[in-house]
Structures are given as C-alpha cells and as structure tokens.
View 1 (cartoon, rainbow, N blue to C red):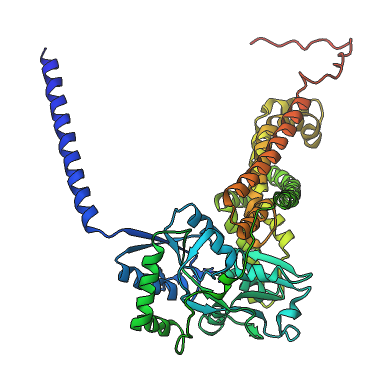
View 2 (tube, rainbow, N blue to C red; view 1 turned 180 degrees about the vertical axis):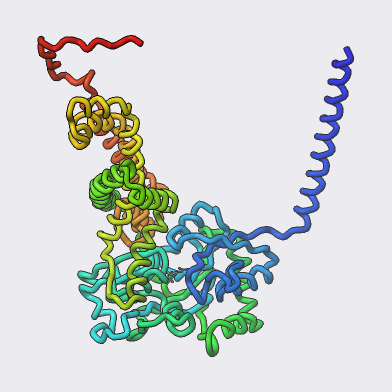
Length: 516
Ligand code: ARG
C-alpha cells in the first residue's frame, strides 16, 4: 500500500517536472525565435586564397569573399554561418537546399545558371596559365596542345582545358594541390583562376612557378543560390548598396591593390545558350572505364599486399625478436593511421623529403597509388595470416616434427592448407574493403570509378542519379567478389570437395592412445 502511494507521488512529481520543462522550452523558443536573426548558411571551399581560406590564427575563415558575404549579411540583417564543402559539392548542396547560398569564387556560367540562381557579378576574374619557372615553350592557350595539365575539379579551368586537343588532364580537389603538382614537375601547366595563382606566387611565396600569357577567359564571380531562391533579391539589394556606398571598394582594397574594375549588372556569360543534359550512354561508358581502373588497382594492390602480408606474418611468428618488433611497428603504423594520410605521405610527402635531401625523385601516380594501397592492405593481411597460422594447434607442429618433417614442409603441407581455409572469409572481407578504399586515390587525380562519377557530376550537376549509378557499379564489383570468395571457400572445404577420398594403406594400424 505504502509502496503504491509512493509510486503515485513519483508520478505526479515527474509529470510536474515535464510540464515545467516544456513550458520553459516553449518560452525560451519563443524568445529566441523573436530575437535572433535567421541563420543564413553559406557554402564555401576554403582553399582558394585570397577569396576564402582558413584564418591565420586557425579559427574560422577569412578572405575577400568572406568579408564581402559578412558585409552583405550585415546589410540584409542575416546571421551568416559558413559551411566548408568541396568545390564540386557546392552546386549539389545548393540544388538540395542544404545551404542557402554559396560564395566561393564561383564563375557565373550559362550551364550553372540552368540549375542555380546567381547574384549580380561581384568580381572580375579570368583563367591564367601557370608553368614552371624554367619553361619557355608554353606561352599561350594554344601551346597547351598535347600537354599534361592539372586543374581543380568542377571549375571553369577544368571546363576550358577539356577543349584542348590531345591534352592529358589531371583533376584535383583543390587548386593548391594542382599547383603543388606543377612544382613537383608532374604536370606541364596549371589552368586556374588568375587572381588565385598570382596571389599564391606573390603573397604566399609559391616558388618555382610563373604565370604566362594573357588571361585565357574573362569571368565574373557571383553568389550562387538555389534556383529561384526568394533570397536572391535580398542579396542583390545588399550587394548593390555596398557597391554604391563604397564599402565594397574598401573590402576590395583590403585584399587587392588598386581600384576595382567596373562590374556589369549582368554577367555576359548568361547571354549564351547552354546544354548540360545527362547522357546516359556516356555515363555508363565512363563508369565502366572507371570500374576497370578500380579493379586493376584492387587486383595489383591485393597481390602485392598478399605477398608482403605473408612475409610480415612469417616475421611476426618468427623467433627473432628485432624482426618481430620491426614488423609489429609496421603493422601498427599502417593499421593505425588513415589510408588517406598514408597516400598523401607517399605521393606528396616522399618527393618533398627527397627534394630537401637534394635528390630528384618523384612518384608516378600509378606506383604511388599501388604502393600506398598495398602497404596498407599488407598490414591487415599480415594479421589475418598470423592469426590463421597460430590458430592451428601447436600439437600438429610437434606431430610433424616427430614424423621427421622440417618446419618448411610442415608449413607447406600441414599448417598452411588448414590455416588458409580459416583465413579465407577475412581475406574476402579485406578484398571487398580494398575495392571500396581504392576510391581514395581519386584525391591524387586517379580517374577510377568514384572520380569518373565526380567528373560527370561536375559538368551535368545530376548528383543523385550519377552517385547512385556509381554505388551500383561498386555493389556489382563487391557482390561478384564475394561470390568468388564463397566459391573458393567451398572448393577448399575437404568435406564438401567432390574428390575421391584416399583410402589409408591397409597395413597401418591405429596408434594406441595411452591412457594415463
Ligand atoms: N572560378 C572558378 C569556377 O567557378 C573556380 C572557383 C574555385 N573556387 C574555389 N573556392 N575553389 O569554376
């Protein structure tokens, strides 16, 4: 009875508390809703100085675009929040309206204007060609024919170089990496927004690189918004005011020398027609080309990983302590650090280190990618193999020894065949993981399956359809591999194998087990 009463009290107390909390939450919500201005989410890709970059102290962003956007927000009474996104992810984010706008040195083009709305132009720019300091043969856009050119994915630079005959184009996630490739001598030129390349050379101390010829294009940057966004008018109004009051000029002079050039009210590019329809035939053709590269990378990395992994596994169970220690450090390092970091270390880090040591060394993309993938996968495979081998009872080693077999024969005929069967399922897992992990090498400009998808999205802006198609092709590859591994497992299973059992020789008598 007493207990029941107590429970009743408790119920009232809880109910009361919940009511109070709800009331407080409502009141607070009403107050905050009234007082705080709307949060306006603005996407940007912040590796594009002087337009957008990480602030010097490391906190937040800074740059011409950032200052301008903040001034516009202040003018329009908005509370701006910047969202960092990869450049080729900005347009899809605007299409899905996960952000309200984007400011990122985005050129106003007729193709983009089909799926987005642009503010009035806020900056005049154009593409510039950058080459190594000692290069004297490339002086204009025409000289780029048949050359190796680095660009940032999804940019107007990438669009322009696609028109050059016989050019070999490598796309990177940021303009900074493209320029690094040029310094490393892996490409002949970089085509990128002029103000950004010049800023990198003049203000950020980028060495060994120069800009040649005239600007290849005339472009105007605009703030991008979802198609027919109701905010367009507000942004345009605020921008027009800043231009009139001279506040725009002040921001401009803070980042660039001299006075800003006059800006047209509408970008000339919008007067031309554009087509960016998705061609399904071309999509599948590109995806299958990419799938071929993915399979090739997976296959070679797995084979090298298997070889390396076997050696490391043997070293890990060997009686030599220093060897065991070295291999343990290797395994822990490659398992314990992100593959992406390892890839960057090998592809960008090693050549830089060698250069500092006064040696001329650079890695080609393919060996670098296979080296990074194999080193990483070998660490996992070594552990799988060590585990598999050690899972076989010690007694079998002893039995073989008493039969006069040496350790190599024991491993070859007795231990490994049994261990291998146990290793097959985790090996299959690793293979499937590797298929998916190869997508990481897209960052060094490899046109494997995922990159092919990204490249198509960057020109057609059909993110959902294309990434779904990419996912399906990966699924096809992983399902096929899992079938192959299942089949291997069945084949290796002595109970299910349909080979004739070998009858034991008649004259062998069963050993007598001595009872203790
Ligand atoms: N203006 C070029 C374009 O619109 C490049 C812009 C790249 N911007 C950036 N933040 N990475 O395609």
